[in-house]
Image (cartoon, rainbow over all chains, first blue to last red; front, top):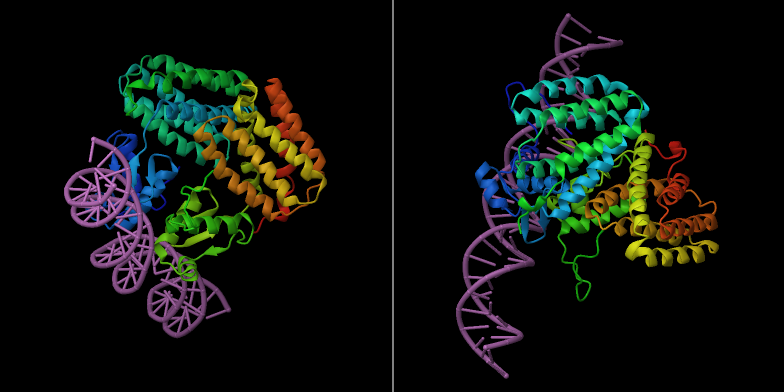
Length: 225
Length: 225
DNA sequence: CTGTTGTCGACTGTCGACATTATCACGCCA
DNA sequence: TGGCGTGATAATGTCGACAGTCGACAACAG
């Protein structure tokens, strides 16, 4: 995941247009503004943004690497459909990657990131009593991101990021209320405790429970035929 | 991995140029013709191939998704360096993905692909006595590809493919002789046996041994500073 | 009525030219 | 001598225009 590669003086973004466009489109997709099946027509996007088609094309290819869009030669680009299988596969992969990361973290008793994990847990706990779902989801995302980063494995982080984009899209499309924020916050604390105790097995089991609750469940309400 | 997306009547390749160019460059990289650190200059490639820069740029972005090249805005594209860390991370991820796949396969006693796995094993056994290393490596690759495909998880397959490109590059750069082809062939037979027996644990252990032998070991001889 | 062929509109693929950026050698000056 | 602006140069980024392809529908032959 990217830190802003340059820090401009007055909000002038000097990154290549393809990245700015890709960011904008990605946001629109994972926020649900662009829905599965929607056609991404280069000419439209280009004129709408006031740029030429070249950077738009390159942006669309960037999105394809996160599997957010389907690029079919000579036919066009569409927001990728979300079948039940897609949701299940994303969940499986996410679980596989994060379980590995948790295991690694537990072996080192959390390493450098243990403190940051605890901070995030505290934040979640305080957010749980309020009703800012958005902030709670952000904190949750930060937590899992920290877990991945904790392994110091760039390849793992890269793969996880691309899959996480799809997960966020899934969560956005099914905008379901969080049922029990307090339980979720507590769950994370338990995970951190298991990591700190070096108990990889328990940490993985808790993680699995958490992910099962938040990402997988009847996907029928979000798939577009 | 890609079956040729169209079957032309007389070898006329109607795929977009970007894909043809990407294939050519990818082959050059994973065969070792292009070495880590080599600069991929759009103008050069374009004039050399007799095309314009646009499809070359898009091809380079495709390669970036497999992490075969580094694209730095306004600076250029280079064949990605292979540090010891890169090799280790690729190995870790490959092991993680394939171990999962083997486990899934074992749970179903091999499913549809068990026959194909056995065929490949027989092929490896017969190749082991000869000295066509290339053919043996191809068979080995086919075996692992079958394992991944056997899970019927497209996302897993996609992630594995992109990582496998790097693995092939690593293998090509350290062109070390295969020490004991017969042992390798036998190892695969044992893996298949464990899958057929539904013994996931043994299958994963055997796989780990096999991969440790073939991909990881003193990478000092292939890293370029 | 059915299957094939021609045509049209919309969109993607490719091209060559121009704008912008990074790099590095060069000369200036303390 | 050594650090620092300052050009020249070579590469990438972007643009507008043109060519190629696809899908759909109309026209036609059997």
